[in-house]
Image (spheres, rainbow, N blue to C red):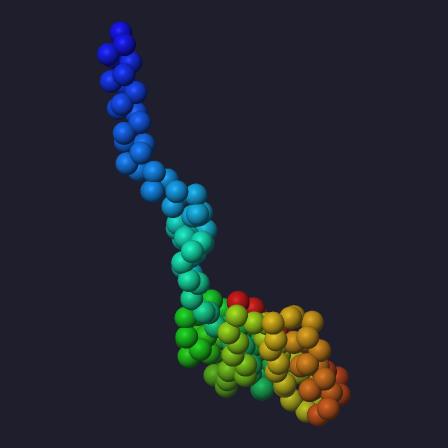
Length: 143
């Protein structure tokens, strides 16, 4: 009986010791959404890629398009223009891991970006009010 118990113990302990490093790494990982909205294993020690967002605006219609989580600024601007859906849409602001805000008034549109949402909103509205009246925030994005 002792031989069987010892053999079973060895069968359980040796494989566990061989995979101890794998178990240690497992504790530093978790499940989360990737950029394509699929569940994947995320390693907390892995570097997070910088992502970009943009806001596009059509001056003739007032339509806007917003993008986020793009890997390049060009991709962010292109996605925002497509999301706007109007032929004369142009990218007005591009941000990287920040808040971007677009404000519109009688003199046109102004944009601002900042790490803090309230600061970005205040900067966009302040810039807009120096040029005209009736300023309001029309779009914002964040990565």
